[in-house]
Length: 483
Image: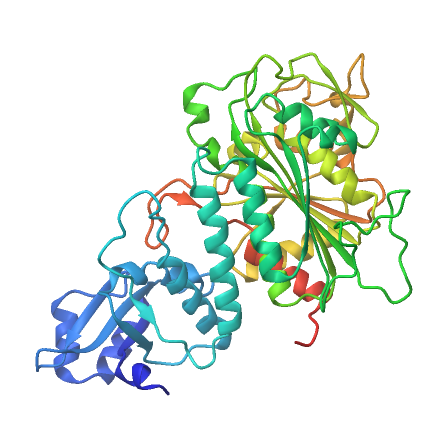
């Protein structure tokens, strides 16, 4: 135990039903103080108990009613509700609970203060519980901060070039290969849908690529391990390959099918899928996972100009499928389809894409539950279970093929929107599925990337949905290599 830990204020975290028994075990003065302040263990409520000499004997925090297991959300509010200082858990928790509490304090300490002076007050700090997985806490805290900073930054300071710079910085930090295709290079190397969506912006569209494998990269200096045919033969005993694809629409005006001002208000977060993919990659590379990773981020601004793509246009795609544009505001699936086609041609074991894709998913599930689709129901169920245990929930949704024909077009292979105004999240997933034909397992996460209401430790702003849950699942599925 360090001197700082010994000097830290003891912190009792109690469920409502534990309070009476706890008070009976405390000194009379402390028990009376708690009773006099009507502390009942309400969730997120805190109380300091004096020591009689002008100091603090202990702090007490409420966990509310015991239900659903202890999560980081029980502790996130304490970081801002307790006075600044160092605290230590005064009683034992299980390894998993201690880890969640430590992560909750770290999460609740987050501040986005790029555009205003930093606050003088600092968040309360929890000394690392001896049985907590602090390596996970540190990796998750760093990755979640990365994602939240990216999502919170407005498009004036986070366009495609800045998103690319963030990805390059991550690649350098983790020893990954970095490559990008910018502007007309997208047409030269056959990413026409990404180019079409982003070409009207003053900032050139691009496709960002990171490649990594544990113990050093075997890919070429150019950042590509593809053969001339576009595929990579699987060698005997080779590591499994995972592709993470993140929607990087840095701002979405809706294009010529322009959004109303209310619809544009939060469109700086339309690159939330890219932020989640980069944050997840950061954690996986830190682990390190026993797999090769490819991270693909189509980064564009869906802007309006004389060369903007139009409703009724027919776009080519990397897959060779043609797409009639039924709505320029359904641009996320268009940039993702080229990236998915690239990943699918490379014999991946698993492809996951992350996207703030449809308002329909939010209508169905609200802002806290990302919609989860996949081609293998067993894999979907396994991921949902792992995410629930990590208190980072995902909700399985049907990839209902009965609706697939509604993406038809009279002049192209498909339309980017369905004729029906219903089941929008399913149609978005069905569109993307057409571009994943060789990979045995594909998962699509339609997420919100935003917390719309003030809660203890979770202010209005960016939310890095799915990072922790998917991380836990992928480590269970593939394991880690010895560091």
